[in-house]
Length: 232
Image 1 (cartoon, one colour):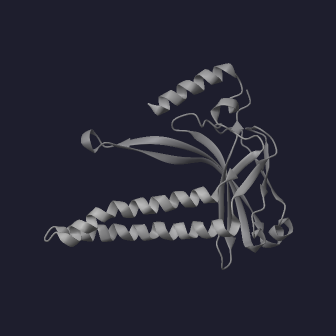
Image 2 (image 1 turned 30 degrees about the vertical axis):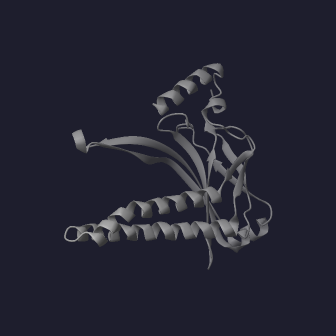
Image 3 (image 1 turned 180 degrees about the horizontal axis):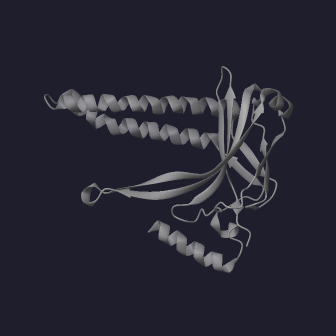
């Protein structure tokens, strides 16, 4: 119902701005986009807490009910190990936040069009000179709803299909020279891929991933949506 309501709003606003879908598809900031490492860390923290809270009743039954209660204890213990992975990833993301902070990606143009050259600038994060390598990846992602089974066993899940990818890397020496300034990012956008449609359910979108490897410290990772549309 929510998706249908959003689609109705999108179609109404798109009719008011023909040929300019970027005005109604998403609340873009023309100057660029921020990756909030704090929000990403907080989301993982809440997920880890929720997972552990989910297991509490199973541990209680396993410790207080004889017989079949042991089955609950074994089940809870196995799934608690998955929780250890969640907490480990949370600690990693906390280290990334404390070391690099939030990051901003500036658009050189707004919007971008399929078939043209994409140019933007990553505001160099704190301690960027400590990275051994920084890789930028551009990708086009299309989400799809997949239904399996039938009747009571029928389930629907969303999968992400990568329709396009390109990447390049910067060495430690190159990053040292860019510390304290902007890191230029440039890609050729293919003309034969779908444009951004964030208002759709499920959506299609373009993103830039910045991933840095640090020797003996927290790695760097950030994601940025980019406005790539089809010229009308």
